Image (cartoon, rainbow, N blue to C red; front, side, top):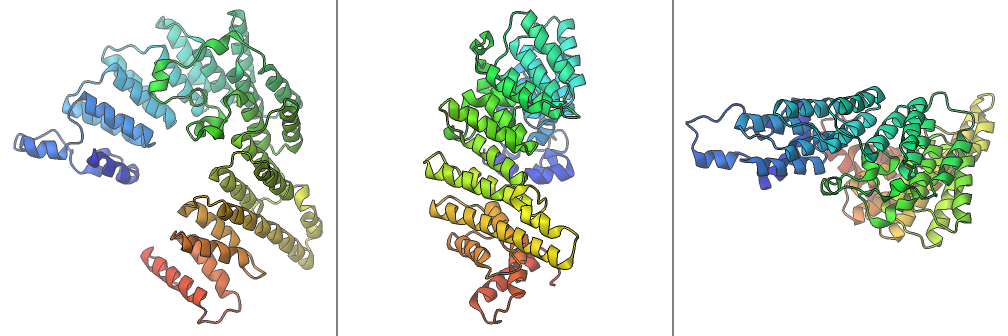
Length: 481
């Protein structure tokens, strides 16, 4: 599998040229009779159905979904007939990558080979439509299932409900809910999460949105017969979680460490995520009070959404205080929580708003030169303090800082126009000690910031940064400024 590993490293180049064949440089046409068997075996990355299935699984797990069709074409070129499991792997891979056109292509190819889709495959197709926000196509799939006499199961209806919710079609969502109730099925936490998503995506937003969200969260706590329908074996084997199948906001986080998500909080997760998207601080606080009354504590995902809501609403101080309280209470802490706070704080530089920057807004009234300068200074102090806060806390707890994470912090800190550049220097020194090389944009911003200050030309820090800047500037082909 060494060849496959090297292939995955190069695969992002394949997106530009459009073929896995061009990445490997090995298979442009059928095997010539002049090529020896030994040479062919050395060059080929798969020889039989089992090996091709392994390649498909590796591409899917590495999120190289755009290469699945190329591998399928290579299978056809080699005369290897895909099995039902192969087509399921292909459709799951396209579902994870939200590649609806490829998904339907594979299903059509499956039909031409005499293999009829089963209910699980149809569920994957409906989920793919939901990821692409195409509820019309999802409804058509249900109609096809009826024509093909494939009986939908509970998961089919939940997939359909969430597909319509992603498109903001409340009318269709409620119609599905009525059908489920008429069939004697209750609504589980995934159904109520879908209802929350549907109301959030509805345009224009309903007036009683907050009340609806609270109602759905409360109802999700009641037991339902649908809850007894656990994940089936095929989804588990293929690494498809319920959150991913139903396109919930937690889909990208469910595979991470155990403390990241608390499964019973599914409706809460969706509610907090919706409140953060809409910058609804009041709803966020209400949901936190509900958790507190139940004697439960927010998990990491909920804390990320709370901090994101506060920051996007302009409540930087409140976000930092919430973060500090979470740490002091000894709750689960992950590097993602630090990065999320840093990302949300950085967005304040582009979209300052809310009561957290009231003085900034007041200073900008009238757009006078002095007032604008005061506003800029106030906002810069807020951002500088927040970035320094995040960086110091991460360093104190010895969290791993990768290149992207460190570069983002350095880029933000380098935007400080006044002051002693303490935060930017701290981040640079921390990355140097850990032998992490920042990306060029961060180095360039930091270098320009040092040049703008009254620093001697022979200053060791300036010389080090200048050397790194010139080296990276030459390597990337940029013109020296």
